[in-house]
Each structure stands twice: as structure tokens, then as C-alpha cells.
Length: 301
Image (cartoon, rainbow, N blue to C red; front, side):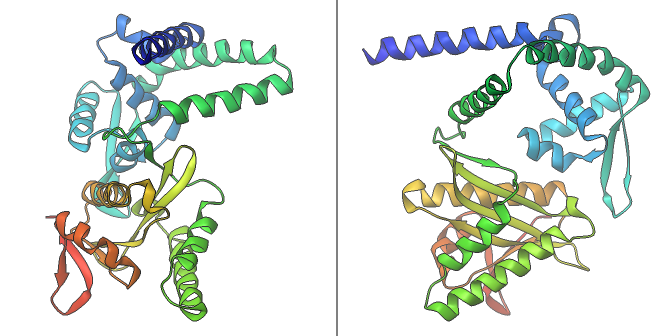
């Protein structure tokens, strides 16, 4: 019986994929008419929508391996589709944007996709539009799986997430009210540092989500005046979520971002609560700092 249900679900998802592709003339269809692969189209459209971005942000948003993405961008540049210029705030990073030729190659397709979608949406009532939006969010949530097959996935921050981070940092603090208050103040300062950074592209934040519910967070911030970054927030709410696996996803996301952004060292302060993560930090290649055993660090170059 289970096999029949599985086959039925597989067929249903495939039908939906083909329906959606035909309905909106999605960029994936263009692979049949172009030398570009579906993934390459996806990267070009991401650059178009961003206007100007950096490779680290593309890698994080599209969840593409940084080495694969780098080779792809090199090919785009050789073909005149994109241009890369030194980033004013950090010469080790490059800003990526479409060239006029790149914009022209995407303009007609982008207009066609938008017009096809708009035609269908105009025929909907407000209630139907709300139902469609909720359904799309449900489909995305149910079909999004991490590489290890669990239902924990990482996403970028949304409105309200930073308040949630401060709240849970306080709730998870070891000790009494004074300890929780101190943790809340520290988390609020970290969030303020993140949100008011003069160069927000040098910082990163991920929310671990399980079945549509926030289950943990990792927040990386630049250390002013240095080439170092630190994991300033790291927690998993529910041990049943897969504590170590989720924390490892957050740590690796921070490390990959730090490498792509040109940081030379990544650190994590180990307070009493973070002792839970010390074995994991060690497995991920972090070592205690010699002059301060509360700090774990990893050299990236």
C-alpha cells in the first residue's frame, strides 16, 4: 500500500511540475532553446532581480556550491552576460551585475513570464489569491528537504525573526532571571549590530525551519577592523529537531559564507549554554583559542 501511495505522489508532483512550467513559461523551458542549462538560467534571473549582488549572496540564496557557482560566473563573464567589479568595501569580493547584453537576453523572457502569470491572477478574487498564496507556501514547505533527508531547512530572515532570536536567546539561557536578562541584552546588541552594519552584505543570518516552524538560528557578523567573522548567535530550540544535525547545518552555512566572503578566520564564543556545541565545533575543525579557552576558532586560509 505504501508503495502505491508513493508512486501516486510522485506522479502527482511530476504533473504539477509540468503544469507549472507550461503555465508560466518558466525559465527552465528555455534550456531547450539555448546552450544554457536550467541552473544557469536560474542564476542569471537571480542576478537580474538583485540588480547588483555578490557571489556569496547568490550561493546562499540559491543554495549552489560556491565552486560550481564561481565556474559558472566565469563562463558568463567570458560570454559577455555579466560583469564583475571590485567591491568598494572589500577588494577581495566582487560585485556581480548583468551587462546590457545580459539584460537584453533576459528581458523578453522575463516579460513573457510576468504577463502569463498576471493574466491568470487578474481573473482571481481576493479570496482565491490568498488561497493560492497559502497553497504555494505549503507546497514549498513540504517539498523542501535538506540533503540528509530531514525536514529541517535553512532560510534567510523574515520580519519578526530577529525579535524571535532575542526572545529565545533569553529563554534558553542557563541560570535564573539575571542570567536570562543578560542573555537577552547580549542578543539584542548582536541583532542591533547586524541590522545597523554599514555593509550588510558582510553579515549573514539563517533560520533553521522544521515543517514550517522556526527551530534554530545562526547569525554571523563581521569583526570591525579585521578580516575575522564570528558566529554571534547559535541555538537550536528543540532537541527532538535533531540538535547536532541542525546545529551543524547552521555552522557549515556560516563557514561557507565566511569563505566566499573572503574572511580569514571564523570564531564562536562558547558560553555555558553553548557547551552543548563544543564537540560539534571540534568535529567541524574549530579549536580553542590559546589565550582564551571560551573562544573556538577556525582559520579559513
